[in-house]
Length: 329
Ligand code: ZN
Image (cartoon, rainbow, N blue to C red; front, side, top):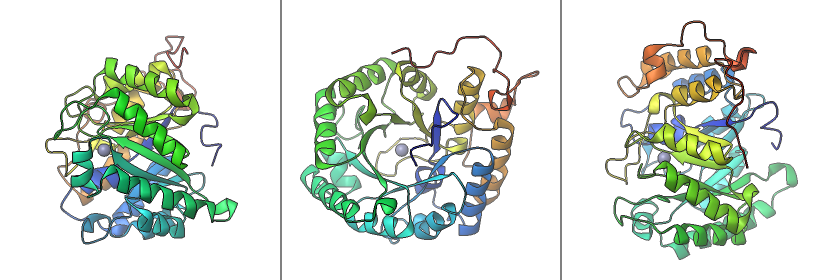
C-alpha cells in the first residue's frame, strides 16, 4: 500500500494492540481487540500493528493474532502490520494477509538473546529465510518487510549502544533484503540530540528512503521531545499506543510507548495533517478501558481539547500559527 501517505504529512502507527497488550497480563478478549481496531480505523488511523506471531504459550495475550490480522484486513485503507520473531512467524503472517511485517533485532546482543533467544547471526538467518519466502509469493501477496533496530539508543543489560554498531547492523539488514529499517528506543534511553544524530548517521549510510519511522517509549518523559526531534529532521512515521499502553517484558523498567492522543494533538496543533480525528480518537479509550482497566494514561485525554480548537483534520490549522516545522531538509 504505497499510497498510505496520501493526503497526510505524518503517519501515526498505532502499536497498542501489540506492544501495548504484550506486557499486560489480563487477556483482552478477541472481540474487544476487533472493536478497538475498528474504532481506531474510524478515527482515521491508517496503520495498526495488530499483534505478534509468537508461539501462544510464550504470549497468550497475542494468541489470536492471525484472526485479528484477518479481521483488520477487512477495514478499507488500513495498513495491517504484525511483528514476526522468525521465519515461522512470517509464514503465519503472510498466510493471514499482513501488509507489513517487522522483525525486531536487538542491537544489543545480550538483549537479543533474552528477547528472541537468538544471536545476531541467528536473526540474520531468519531474515534471509523471510526474504526468500517473500520473493516466492505472488506480487500482490508480498508484505513490506521492516527490520527494526531495537535497543538502538541504549540497553538495560549492556548500557550504551554505539551509533556505529546500529548503522552497521542496519546496513546488513538492508543488504539481506529488508525493504526498510526502523529505529526503536525499546528502553526509553534516547534523548533528542541522540535521535537526530542517529537518524542522520543511518541516512548517510543507506539513504533517507530506507529509514522513515521511529518507535519511541516514554520511560523518562522524553517521548514527545524525541518525536519532535525526529519530526524536525524529516521522519514521517511514528509508533505510539493509545493511552501509552505497554512496555517490554524483557527490558526491566521500560514503560509504555508515547501516547497516541498526545502525539496526535502535538502534530495536529502544529498544523500537520495526520488524517486522524482527535475527538473520535479520545473516545476509543472507552473500549480499551472496559477491557483492560487501569492501564492507560495521557495528558490530552485528561485535560481535553483546548477551547476554540479547530482540528487540522477538520480543515482548521491547529492554532493557525502559520508555518509548520516539518522536514526542513
Ligand atoms: Zn516498544
